[in-house]
Image (cartoon, rainbow, N blue to C red; front, side):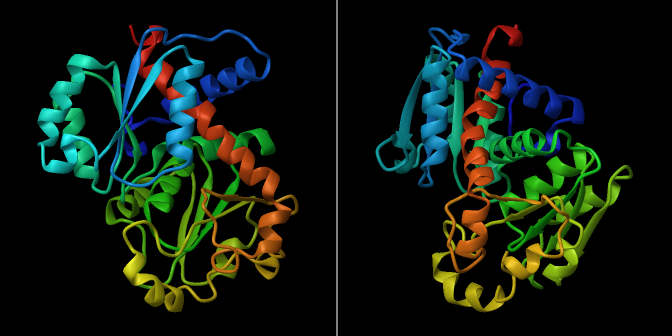
Length: 306
Protein backbone atom coordinates (compact mmCIF):
# COMPACT_ATOMS: atom_id res chain seq x y z
CA UNK A 1 0.00 0.00 0.00
CA UNK A 2 1.68 3.20 -1.21
CA UNK A 3 -1.27 5.54 -0.60
CA UNK A 4 -4.84 5.35 0.72
CA UNK A 5 -6.94 6.92 -2.03
CA UNK A 6 -10.01 4.63 -2.08
CA UNK A 7 -10.93 1.18 -0.83
CA UNK A 8 -11.27 -0.08 -4.40
CA UNK A 9 -7.45 -0.04 -4.47
CA UNK A 10 -7.08 -2.38 -1.47
CA UNK A 11 -7.35 -6.14 -1.15
CA UNK A 12 -9.26 -7.90 1.61
CA UNK A 13 -5.93 -8.83 3.20
CA UNK A 14 -4.75 -5.21 3.23
CA UNK A 15 -8.00 -4.04 4.83
CA UNK A 16 -7.85 -6.72 7.54
CA UNK A 17 -4.19 -5.87 8.21
CA UNK A 18 -5.10 -2.21 8.76
CA UNK A 19 -7.86 -3.25 11.17
CA UNK A 20 -5.50 -5.52 13.08
CA UNK A 21 -2.92 -2.76 13.41
CA UNK A 22 -5.72 -0.37 14.45
CA UNK A 23 -6.71 -2.77 17.24
CA UNK A 24 -3.10 -2.79 18.45
CA UNK A 25 -2.92 1.01 18.30
CA UNK A 26 -6.08 1.23 20.40
CA UNK A 27 -4.69 -1.26 22.93
CA UNK A 28 -1.45 0.69 23.19
CA UNK A 29 -3.24 3.99 23.73
CA UNK A 30 -5.72 2.59 26.29
CA UNK A 31 -2.92 0.92 28.28
CA UNK A 32 -0.50 3.83 28.20
CA UNK A 33 2.07 1.96 26.11
CA UNK A 34 4.60 4.05 24.22
CA UNK A 35 4.01 3.88 20.48
CA UNK A 36 5.90 6.87 19.07
CA UNK A 37 6.53 5.08 15.78
CA UNK A 38 6.51 8.34 13.79
CA UNK A 39 9.00 10.26 15.89
CA UNK A 40 10.22 13.24 13.87
CA UNK A 41 7.71 12.67 11.02
CA UNK A 42 5.39 15.40 9.70
CA UNK A 43 1.95 15.09 8.10
CA UNK A 44 0.62 17.94 5.93
CA UNK A 45 -3.18 18.15 6.25
CA UNK A 46 -4.97 19.97 3.41
CA UNK A 47 -8.55 21.00 4.13
CA UNK A 48 -10.87 22.29 1.41
CA UNK A 49 -13.92 21.03 3.34
CA UNK A 50 -14.85 21.76 6.96
CA UNK A 51 -13.99 19.12 9.53
CA UNK A 52 -14.25 18.12 13.17
CA UNK A 53 -13.46 14.40 13.40
CA UNK A 54 -11.00 14.24 10.50
CA UNK A 55 -8.84 17.11 11.71
CA UNK A 56 -8.88 16.22 15.40
CA UNK A 57 -8.28 12.49 14.86
CA UNK A 58 -5.40 12.94 12.41
CA UNK A 59 -3.76 15.70 14.47
CA UNK A 60 -4.15 13.76 17.71
CA UNK A 61 -3.02 10.56 16.02
CA UNK A 62 0.19 12.12 14.75
CA UNK A 63 0.91 13.53 18.21
CA UNK A 64 0.34 10.15 19.88
CA UNK A 65 2.63 8.51 17.32
CA UNK A 66 5.37 11.01 18.14
CA UNK A 67 5.02 13.08 14.97
CA UNK A 68 3.57 16.44 14.03
CA UNK A 69 0.62 17.52 11.88
CA UNK A 70 0.38 20.78 9.91
CA UNK A 71 -3.05 22.25 9.16
CA UNK A 72 -3.31 23.82 5.69
CA UNK A 73 -6.59 25.56 4.97
CA UNK A 74 -7.40 26.24 1.33
CA UNK A 75 -8.44 29.75 2.40
CA UNK A 76 -5.06 30.50 3.95
CA UNK A 77 -2.62 28.73 1.62
CA UNK A 78 -1.59 29.05 -2.00
CA UNK A 79 -3.88 26.11 -2.85
CA UNK A 80 -6.82 28.47 -2.43
CA UNK A 81 -5.19 30.95 -4.82
CA UNK A 82 -4.94 28.46 -7.64
CA UNK A 83 -1.55 26.81 -7.18
CA UNK A 84 -1.69 23.59 -9.25
CA UNK A 85 -2.10 20.33 -7.35
CA UNK A 86 1.04 18.92 -8.96
CA UNK A 87 3.12 21.83 -7.64
CA UNK A 88 1.64 21.50 -4.16
CA UNK A 89 2.48 17.79 -4.22
CA UNK A 90 6.10 18.36 -5.20
CA UNK A 91 6.64 21.13 -2.64
CA UNK A 92 5.11 19.21 0.27
CA UNK A 93 7.16 16.15 -0.71
CA UNK A 94 10.30 18.22 0.02
CA UNK A 95 9.07 19.23 3.49
CA UNK A 96 6.86 16.48 4.88
CA UNK A 97 6.58 12.70 5.21
CA UNK A 98 2.90 12.35 4.26
CA UNK A 99 -0.14 14.27 3.03
CA UNK A 100 -3.76 13.97 4.09
CA UNK A 101 -6.30 15.85 1.98
CA UNK A 102 -10.02 16.48 2.54
CA UNK A 103 -11.53 17.91 -0.62
CA UNK A 104 -14.32 17.66 -3.20
CA UNK A 105 -12.92 15.90 -6.24
CA UNK A 106 -11.43 12.40 -6.23
CA UNK A 107 -9.38 13.43 -9.28
CA UNK A 108 -7.56 16.01 -7.14
CA UNK A 109 -6.50 13.32 -4.66
CA UNK A 110 -5.39 10.99 -7.43
CA UNK A 111 -3.31 13.74 -9.08
CA UNK A 112 -1.79 14.71 -5.73
CA UNK A 113 -0.65 11.10 -5.28
CA UNK A 114 0.66 10.93 -8.84
CA UNK A 115 3.03 13.86 -8.33
CA UNK A 116 3.92 13.36 -4.63
CA UNK A 117 6.97 11.37 -3.57
CA UNK A 118 5.36 10.74 -0.16
CA UNK A 119 2.19 8.84 0.84
CA UNK A 120 -1.18 10.51 0.25
CA UNK A 121 -4.28 9.76 2.35
CA UNK A 122 -7.81 10.57 1.25
CA UNK A 123 -9.50 12.23 4.24
CA UNK A 124 -12.74 12.56 2.22
CA UNK A 125 -13.89 13.36 -1.30
CA UNK A 126 -17.33 13.45 -2.88
CA UNK A 127 -16.58 9.94 -4.19
CA UNK A 128 -15.01 8.15 -1.24
CA UNK A 129 -14.43 8.22 2.52
CA UNK A 130 -12.02 5.31 3.11
CA UNK A 131 -10.78 6.35 6.56
CA UNK A 132 -14.31 6.49 7.91
CA UNK A 133 -15.18 3.04 6.60
CA UNK A 134 -12.02 1.50 8.05
CA UNK A 135 -13.18 2.86 11.43
CA UNK A 136 -16.67 1.50 10.75
CA UNK A 137 -15.33 -2.00 10.03
CA UNK A 138 -13.16 -1.84 13.12
CA UNK A 139 -16.22 -0.94 15.23
CA UNK A 140 -18.42 -3.67 13.76
CA UNK A 141 -15.74 -6.28 14.43
CA UNK A 142 -15.36 -5.05 18.01
CA UNK A 143 -19.08 -5.37 18.71
CA UNK A 144 -19.92 -8.42 16.59
CA UNK A 145 -16.61 -10.32 16.93
CA UNK A 146 -16.50 -10.91 13.16
CA UNK A 147 -17.18 -9.32 9.76
CA UNK A 148 -17.58 -12.14 7.26
CA UNK A 149 -21.19 -13.26 6.81
CA UNK A 150 -22.78 -10.28 8.58
CA UNK A 151 -25.57 -8.33 6.88
CA UNK A 152 -24.97 -4.58 6.42
CA UNK A 153 -27.77 -2.21 5.46
CA UNK A 154 -27.47 1.44 4.38
CA UNK A 155 -30.48 3.77 4.27
CA UNK A 156 -30.19 7.11 2.46
CA UNK A 157 -28.13 8.94 -0.14
CA UNK A 158 -25.82 7.11 -2.56
CA UNK A 159 -22.95 9.37 -1.53
CA UNK A 160 -19.27 8.95 -0.66
CA UNK A 161 -20.14 7.06 2.51
CA UNK A 162 -22.21 4.39 0.82
CA UNK A 163 -19.68 4.14 -2.03
CA UNK A 164 -16.93 3.24 0.42
CA UNK A 165 -19.20 1.11 2.62
CA UNK A 166 -20.28 -1.04 -0.32
CA UNK A 167 -16.68 -1.66 -1.35
CA UNK A 168 -15.26 -2.15 2.14
CA UNK A 169 -18.03 -4.40 3.42
CA UNK A 170 -18.16 -6.59 0.31
CA UNK A 171 -14.37 -6.97 0.30
CA UNK A 172 -14.38 -8.36 3.86
CA UNK A 173 -17.25 -10.77 3.08
CA UNK A 174 -20.27 -8.89 4.43
CA UNK A 175 -23.59 -8.96 2.60
CA UNK A 176 -24.75 -5.47 1.61
CA UNK A 177 -28.24 -4.07 1.11
CA UNK A 178 -28.77 -0.43 0.17
CA UNK A 179 -31.98 1.61 0.02
CA UNK A 180 -31.79 4.88 -1.94
CA UNK A 181 -34.48 6.97 -3.66
CA UNK A 182 -34.44 6.87 -7.44
CA UNK A 183 -31.87 9.31 -8.80
CA UNK A 184 -29.63 9.04 -5.73
CA UNK A 185 -27.89 5.73 -6.41
CA UNK A 186 -24.25 4.91 -5.57
CA UNK A 187 -21.53 5.74 -8.10
CA UNK A 188 -21.54 3.59 -11.29
CA UNK A 189 -17.95 2.42 -10.64
CA UNK A 190 -19.06 1.08 -7.25
CA UNK A 191 -22.12 -0.59 -8.73
CA UNK A 192 -19.89 -2.25 -11.33
CA UNK A 193 -17.59 -3.51 -8.58
CA UNK A 194 -20.56 -4.86 -6.58
CA UNK A 195 -21.68 -6.90 -9.61
CA UNK A 196 -18.27 -8.59 -9.77
CA UNK A 197 -18.34 -9.88 -6.18
CA UNK A 198 -19.10 -13.60 -5.88
CA UNK A 199 -18.55 -14.42 -2.18
CA UNK A 200 -21.05 -11.91 -0.74
CA UNK A 201 -24.40 -10.50 -1.85
CA UNK A 202 -25.36 -6.97 -2.89
CA UNK A 203 -28.90 -5.58 -3.20
CA UNK A 204 -30.10 -2.11 -4.21
CA UNK A 205 -33.73 -1.35 -3.44
CA UNK A 206 -36.12 1.62 -3.10
CA UNK A 207 -37.70 0.09 0.02
CA UNK A 208 -35.90 0.82 3.34
CA UNK A 209 -37.81 -1.93 5.15
CA UNK A 210 -36.73 -4.48 2.56
CA UNK A 211 -33.11 -3.37 2.88
CA UNK A 212 -33.17 -3.51 6.68
CA UNK A 213 -34.77 -6.95 6.99
CA UNK A 214 -32.35 -9.28 8.77
CA UNK A 215 -29.62 -6.63 9.11
CA UNK A 216 -26.84 -6.95 11.69
CA UNK A 217 -25.74 -3.34 11.27
CA UNK A 218 -27.64 -0.36 9.88
CA UNK A 219 -25.87 2.72 8.49
CA UNK A 220 -27.23 6.09 7.51
CA UNK A 221 -25.92 9.56 6.70
CA UNK A 222 -27.25 13.08 6.25
CA UNK A 223 -29.56 13.72 3.30
CA UNK A 224 -27.56 16.76 2.11
CA UNK A 225 -23.77 16.55 2.34
CA UNK A 226 -21.28 19.43 2.25
CA UNK A 227 -21.61 21.35 -1.00
CA UNK A 228 -25.25 20.29 -1.42
CA UNK A 229 -26.79 22.90 0.86
CA UNK A 230 -28.73 24.48 -2.02
CA UNK A 231 -30.44 21.12 -2.59
CA UNK A 232 -31.63 20.76 1.02
CA UNK A 233 -35.35 21.33 0.37
CA UNK A 234 -35.36 19.09 -2.71
CA UNK A 235 -33.51 16.36 -0.87
CA UNK A 236 -35.79 16.51 2.18
CA UNK A 237 -38.71 15.78 -0.14
CA UNK A 238 -36.89 12.99 -1.98
CA UNK A 239 -35.72 11.25 1.21
CA UNK A 240 -39.00 11.22 3.11
CA UNK A 241 -39.40 7.69 4.44
CA UNK A 242 -35.66 6.96 4.25
CA UNK A 243 -35.23 7.23 7.98
CA UNK A 244 -33.72 4.92 10.57
CA UNK A 245 -36.49 4.72 13.16
CA UNK A 246 -37.97 2.27 15.63
CA UNK A 247 -40.26 0.69 13.01
CA UNK A 248 -37.29 -0.01 10.72
CA UNK A 249 -35.19 -1.42 13.56
CA UNK A 250 -37.92 -3.95 14.37
CA UNK A 251 -37.24 -5.84 11.12
CA UNK A 252 -33.49 -6.13 11.77
CA UNK A 253 -31.78 -9.00 13.57
CA UNK A 254 -31.66 -9.01 17.40
CA UNK A 255 -28.66 -7.03 18.59
CA UNK A 256 -28.47 -5.02 15.36
CA UNK A 257 -26.00 -2.13 15.54
CA UNK A 258 -26.55 1.40 14.24
CA UNK A 259 -23.69 3.44 12.78
CA UNK A 260 -23.57 7.08 11.66
CA UNK A 261 -20.44 8.90 10.44
CA UNK A 262 -21.70 12.17 12.03
CA UNK A 263 -22.78 14.89 12.22
CA UNK A 264 -26.34 13.56 12.59
CA UNK A 265 -29.54 15.45 11.86
CA UNK A 266 -31.93 13.96 14.40
CA UNK A 267 -35.46 13.83 13.07
CA UNK A 268 -34.30 13.55 9.46
CA UNK A 269 -32.18 10.51 8.52
CA UNK A 270 -32.42 9.08 12.06
CA UNK A 271 -34.75 9.63 14.99
CA UNK A 272 -33.41 10.95 18.28
CA UNK A 273 -34.70 7.80 20.01
CA UNK A 274 -32.77 5.39 17.81
CA UNK A 275 -29.67 7.58 17.85
CA UNK A 276 -29.56 7.73 21.64
CA UNK A 277 -30.32 4.01 22.00
CA UNK A 278 -27.23 3.29 19.89
CA UNK A 279 -25.08 6.25 20.93
CA UNK A 280 -22.45 3.99 22.49
CA UNK A 281 -21.85 2.22 19.18
CA UNK A 282 -21.93 5.48 17.21
CA UNK A 283 -19.34 7.18 19.40
CA UNK A 284 -17.18 4.05 19.48
CA UNK A 285 -17.25 4.43 15.69
CA UNK A 286 -16.19 8.09 15.98
CA UNK A 287 -13.37 7.20 18.39
CA UNK A 288 -12.11 4.48 16.09
CA UNK A 289 -11.35 7.09 13.44
CA UNK A 290 -8.33 7.87 15.62
CA UNK A 291 -7.11 4.28 15.94
CA UNK A 292 -7.78 3.18 12.34
CA UNK A 293 -6.05 6.29 10.98
CA UNK A 294 -3.06 5.78 13.26
CA UNK A 295 -2.76 2.34 11.70
CA UNK A 296 -2.83 3.88 8.21
CA UNK A 297 -0.27 6.52 9.19
CA UNK A 298 2.06 3.89 10.64
CA UNK A 299 1.72 1.54 7.67
CA UNK A 300 2.36 4.34 5.17
CA UNK A 301 4.94 6.44 7.03
CA UNK A 302 6.47 4.21 9.73
CA UNK A 303 9.14 1.58 9.98
CA UNK A 304 7.00 -1.15 8.41
CA UNK A 305 6.92 0.93 5.20
CA UNK A 306 10.66 0.33 4.82
